[in-house]
Image (cartoon, rainbow, N blue to C red; front, side, top):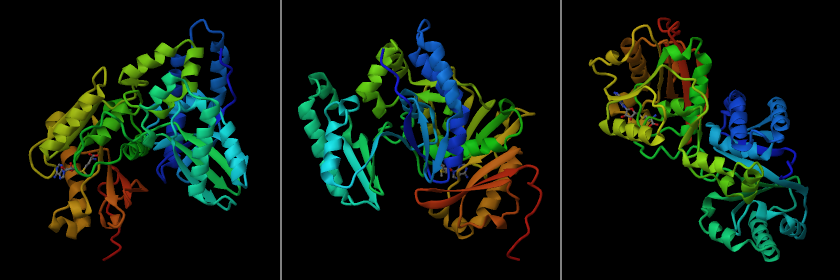
Length: 443
Ligand SMILES: C[S@@+](CC[C@H](N)C(=O)[O-])C[C@H]1O[C@@H](n2cnc3c(N)ncnc32)[C@H](O)[C@@H]1O
């Protein structure tokens, strides 16, 4: 049996301004993470069962330190790996390998030749990223060079097996990184456990114009959920400009673990050893062969996506097929123009509350006339949504340079964030305020 080590520090990188939502996601999903972990690791008869589970439950009170653009937590190593499969808001997850004071290159070289790289690498030289602030070692190029030389020297002393080397040749080095950070002469070495950025969902193969990044969509959905004060299972979620279906797919797959993509941690020899020690190596390969693993059934009654572009509807449908959600959920994707008269109401059940989430085109993507007066465009859009769907809640992404105070509906909440360098607001309106005009600051 492999001896369990104490907790490891994980740095969960999240989009700036999504830190609190990421903490919320982590706390909501913690029981699901424990479930997934136990189903992957514990044997029924194992003596470990009670010890580990009580250990893990006590970790529920774990400390989370928020840093701009990330969360720092300390949890068992294997659980940290699994966060990659479950959390939807993070961009990537790093694990701290070592931390030591260092003021000269010979010490850095020495330290790195002695680190047990064979636990994480299979003979490959990973891509190395270095940063330095307020430290004597500030030449990042030389830090990288030193690290590469040290890892090569380590391999001479402890050559990886032939099999490892063969496997190493299949690893995508560009997405396999070690991070070396110097701050006040403290050197911290971390390894990326994610590989390709986590917003790459693997089932999201078909995209149309201006797609929203999946992890931002997941975060905004969680923000919207904060405003829902009625049973979700009685409500319908509608995206009236669904594009390739990002919001709806993120909503549907929020509580699934995604195994249908590669993660760096699955190539770590130590991860395999952990699974072997739990006699559950087959479990993980079973999971990884299945596409997605449903952890919880907290769903809206129905999901509806509309778009006036046939290609967008087609892309969203294909993505949904790739997601292979079993058992299938009630999702309908229909070509319809929000501003045209044709009725979309036939797809709605009477007595259902309607929740809308929308990422409309803005700025250069609008027709010239609409782009000239975006306030008017968003006003018209929101009014159409109210007339067409009578929503209880509607949430919309609006560029921050559009003065939302000129729109005649009063927001319930405003969440500022950025996407691709563009400053945006995610504004939620509630039907209690639809009829109330805001004072016009400009008249
Ligand atoms: C910014 S994109 C949405 C992207 C989507 N969130 C995604 O991630 O793929 C805006 C979408 O609105 C659609 N659209 C524009 N005007 C529309 C209208 N009047 N009615 C319905 N859909 C419209 C466009 O075809 C486009 O797919």
